[in-house]
Image (cartoon, rainbow, N blue to C red):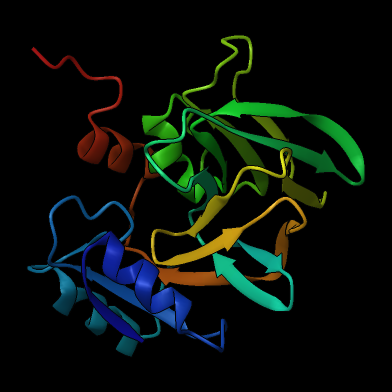
Length: 222
């Protein structure tokens, strides 16, 4: 499957892919192109290599999210936010394998994959995680308690996210494309899918080169 656009195009396409065994050729015609790594002037070489049987695949782990009877997938992240800018904070709780992890008060909380660690979570102060790992990254959004910092969990657990107060309403955002309103009685169940997304990457590509080139990580800005 060929996807032409930016990272947002890839995320929207991912939502509609039913057979995750399909290999994605993501050609960047957007701006940053962190996930869509193949440049417009280099795509012919990719197709020539495929015809020769030379193909480099990177597998990305993604989340499965259950809310009531509905199920969603997320490549980057799922996050909870307030339902209105008029509301000061939203209170939520997270459970890991039925054990209470903690309460989060603030603008919300992000649960990201390593792929998503360079997206919204990074802007909220979370760390970068290399994409081959299968981990959960929980990053509070503008926490009321400054001691509530990001935490990394094993990808083999199940996470349950709930709202703490009956008077509050929240919005669940999945990869920036899907929105779901939740109340105190709703549970957001999050785990890793047994499948992976398979993305064709350029030959001899180095992830750390991409990190420096696209995000300017580890480089002087002036």
